[in-house]
Amino acid sequence: MPLKTILTALVASLGLLAAAPVLNTTKSLETVKAHFTRSLQNHPDPAKYPRSSNADGSFSAVASSDWTSGFFPGSLWYLYEYTKDKKWEAEARRWTAGLEKEQFNRGTHDLGFMLYCSYGNGLRLTNDPAYRAVLLAGAKSLMTRFNPRVGAIKSWDTKQWQYPVIVDNMMNLELLFWATKASGDSSYYKAAVTHALTTMKNHFRPDNSSYHVVNYDTLTGRVLARETAQGFANESAWARGQAWGLYGYTATYRATKDRRFLAQAQRIADFFLHHPALPADKVPYWDFNVPTPGPANEPRDASAAAIAASGLLELSQYAGKQGAEYKQAALQILESLSSPNYLAKPGTNNDFVLMHSTGHKPAKSEMDVPLVYADYYYIEGLLRARKMGIK
Image 1 (cartoon, rainbow, N blue to C red):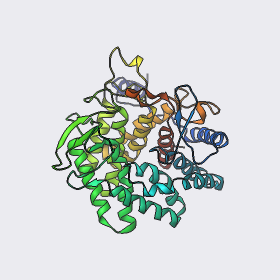
Image 2: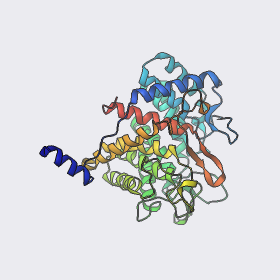
Image 3: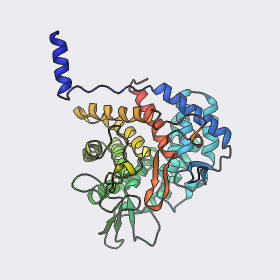
Image 4: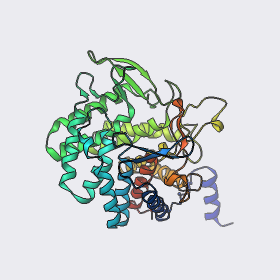
């Protein structure tokens, strides 16, 4: 046997030679196009934003005020970016227009999801000044939810908590960072950085997993409780929450170049990727601490996987030597999501792209269903992979 063959076999046996994932982004994106083509035909009302499937299997749509409303138009913008076909731009504009009034919505922290995914992508691809104006008004609305004493943006208006802040809120900071860049007003930037630091201080455990909800006292700013809403237990690691944190701190590092945020993103990524409960295909169960009798009885969350994959691809560009590991893991996740195990056949799945996501299992809501935001971050991940040369 040739020496080269012996050495290759030895290295592989030691687990030091990892096969690069095989991902065909073009094939996957063509499947995405087929799904969205049918969705536009079957669900033509731009005031009813696709969100999921109901428990009985029927199609689920929401109004513009729902936190998920920006993902469908955002996905259409991504398809325009991929195809350069004006018909996708026209559809993206049509579905984005219905969100315009949300720029004045001060009752939600999710304006980043609602407006930056839609109008933000539209502005990036068309430089439409009307989109810029909507985004700036939305950023002003989001700022009304920032409490300097707490040092964070309030997530929910509810009697259950005094001042709840959820880890998901890291995803809405991009809108504020953009607003400072667009307007020259540094107050947006300062609020976003303060929120990120407060979250880093209070949301994360020694193992670098995060709580879902931290409740603050509005008078003193002290932590009243650390809990969960959508996870298995207060001390468990809700899978999508970990993905939100990974992605959010990566984006925060991009905006600030503050290495504290890069380190935090890497710590979260390492927790996610090295957790013993992460399946071989790297698509997690809905919570990393699922209860007995075991994972076989628990649903996966493809949305958490898609968010993590997209975040990991960006993080890989900043992480030095560890970047190769993050890139390979992200491509493996995207490859898994592109397999028949998760990628639905066109004409099925209520015209959503991915199967097997979990929205809110404790509330028995959206369990093992498609979710529009899983599709959005999956498409984003595929486009990011293409920019890295993965065709």
